Length: 226
Image (cartoon, rainbow, N blue to C red; front, side, top):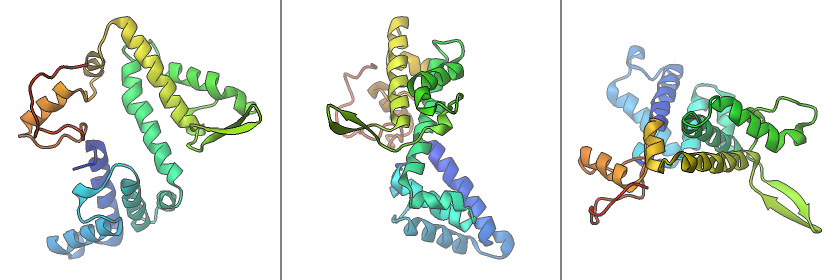
């Protein structure tokens, strides 16, 4: 399984809504086999033979777009044509669900801290909009002229994620925490090798969605947390 647990939960939630909208339910007279076939058809239209093969980025975006179409959700459907929408959704998810919990360990008001970073970094570009928030930032590449040459740089959202990552690591080091310490205290899944192997051992060596590069086929000894 390549999708993360939150993505799986969202798939099943969106599938249930799509099935109700299309009347693909047992209450509408369909058998479990017929319902399963409709679900397989949706996954195959996204380009995959099974849900376990769906990747976390563009594949998942295609799947959500089709489920949105089945629900007559036009806003979600256009994600197929505009990849920046899905990328923006993922980067905002990182800020809200991975970076804010870490900031809570080190600053008194993490949401205000993020707002201040956004204001300091991008406020000058929104002169007529004093209260810039994360929803105002996008994933379009930025261009600027340097010594007569146009250079491309990361999008506003990617710049925000990288800036917050650097600030968090600086705060973490000052506190004496390791990455493992920080993520454990923040209640996040730690992806250090020791944690990955521990979770996989508990799951009977099943792949860990948070550690796609970790395998139990090699030696398992001599591991440590960062």
